[in-house]
Image (cartoon, rainbow, N blue to C red; front, side, top):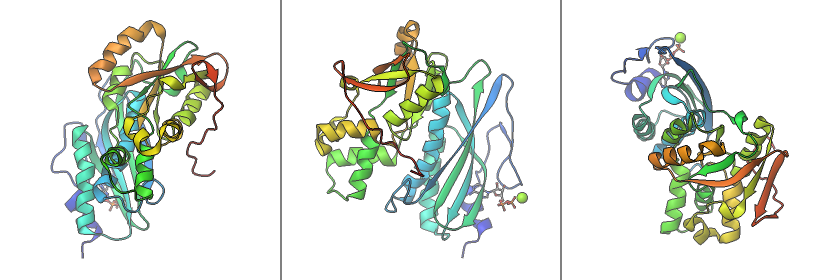
Length: 318
Ligand code: ADP
Ligand code: MG
């Protein structure tokens, strides 16, 4: 039987650390070097079986997702993710499961050059928590509160695909190519770190979309003290989503589906052309979907006509 110590040593002790890690896994805490000219950016996100991912998810996908949702928070701040700690609560020390979990986790960690520097390992119902630490230049970071009336509202990628993918999984629909595309969006979100970095000095406000475009836009508006008009005819809705769910439900998923981990951000008009160029450089498709308004609240319009919407974003306690 593998004990806690062996488990940590076997799966979660990196062979070597980059220069910023003065002390990593194995001591009571990690010691990290923060370079002058930068601020430390910290966030934590927990994923729970049956709440954030279905029981049928593979260990690889769970490992990927646990880190991806945290990297997405760094992206939203325009920060460079650097280090993370991992709190693992598992019912048993299952070797094949841990091996796959670690593979998913470290594949994404390597892609973003983030380093595991510590954690905690306990027995209990599946619950995986990652704290992420990143750096951002002293002269500014992105946040939710900077949007001004007239700023153009953008969303990256195609929102709704992840929520569609989750439904495909839960309903155990027979797998067709379109289903596969959606499911992959749910299981392997691609955190928009590069886009966040490109937007750092250009966007006036930003956040990541975890609970649904409408709900999260509402949060951005409240933080900024203004409202927004969202033009439904501009909202990108993927062909796969429409193929599987039909046009109406696909639009609803794009508006209210969670788990996309795309970025929602606002750009002042005078910085639009510079921002278009910066976005093009990242290779991530971003679409203008609306404009910030002086009036509070989020309004949805289709070709100029107001379409009442019920916000259905995710809330754990509602
Ligand atoms: P402590 O006695 O301080 O509670 P632990 O015995 O829980 O420490 O952990 C020993 C070392 O292993 C610590 O450096 C801790 O950060 C690290 N660690 C524990 N679990 C994990 C994990 N899941 N991933 C990475 N590091 C871990
Ligand atoms: Mg200790």
